[in-house]
Length: 148
Image (cartoon, rainbow, N blue to C red; front, top):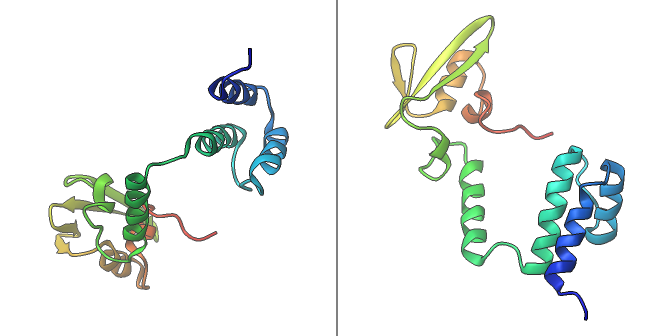
């Protein structure tokens, strides 16, 4: 009796638990191409398991792929967060950033942001006032990773 494809995939993913980072990267190269450079052993293991499952079962459905693409585009714009990108910024949340030895606190409002007794339409306006230099507000407050 031959094994089912799901059984083979399950066994292959279970074997990942015993592999170190070097072996995981070797397997990634063999099965998927160039592995990510900046991933820990656990992240590489989880990511590799997901990729193997996606190849075997098809990955995200088209609606999820469209949503992720739209979410990615909205996070790249240097504007006040849209409702899609703003999910983590709920009114009442407080963003904190230390700059020049001073701790700055910004409160997220329904419409905009409050800092130093005034309301602003974007985090970028506040970041520029704090630093004296043009900044991406989400990047300044640590909401968006810089290019590495």
